[in-house]
Length: 161
Image 1 (tube, one colour):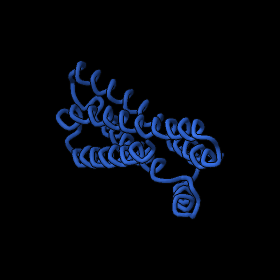
Image 2 (cartoon, rainbow, N blue to C red; image 1 turned 30 degrees about the vertical axis):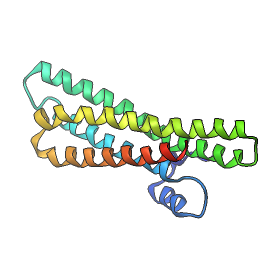
Image 3 (cartoon, rainbow, N blue to C red; image 1 turned 120 degrees about the horizontal axis):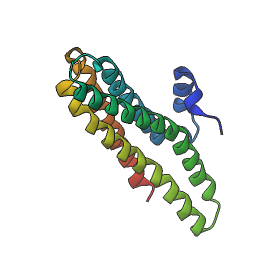
Image 4 (cartoon, rainbow, N blue to C red; image 1 turned 90 degrees about the vertical axis):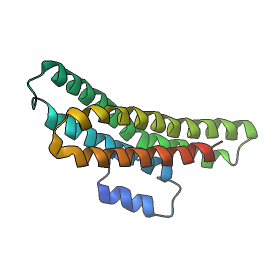
């Protein structure tokens, strides 16, 4: 399977809009989560050393490390979700046990997207309160994107029961 995370934005969007089973809503949810988390990282990067407090800089640095770990995993899930859904499509011609196994895998990916988006939102409070005040709108956009990704992934998790 091709790696969507290595596509240009145009190529990914062309694939997403095509009449093909993947990528789909789950992959898009992971991408939106990754985009929201990238904004969290950006604000953290801009907020480092804006304060003389070593303790606050340390907290921001930790938030940055966490957000980057989450962002990278969400980007991996763009492809893993597509792969899992292809497994569901292929399992339709299989026995019931194979179908259930494929659906379980396809449910686990969006649930992980939900957990990661939740974890990323938790990082925004510090940055909204103590980060660079010129980037407050970016934190708000990040929260909106992460919320949308969470809700979208939850839809997919419910469908894949």
